[in-house]
Length: 94
Image: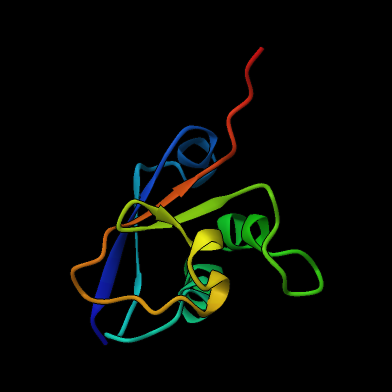
């Protein structure tokens, strides 16, 4: 199965121990399917993405080609081969 490389930032890099994560991926998958692959590959990161009820948590924001999936179709957003996927924890400031 082909893979997709995801970019990790901030504390997610610390959790994963790397700045990139490769997961199984097929053209046309949804973010929900990608999250399932993340959970298989790196459960520590996968567990941060979804709440127990299967909705997206606020601990990780997923960007598809620079756009937050929450502004697209959420977990049902379709991913193309050329899309860059970025996982970013919310930032805090003051």
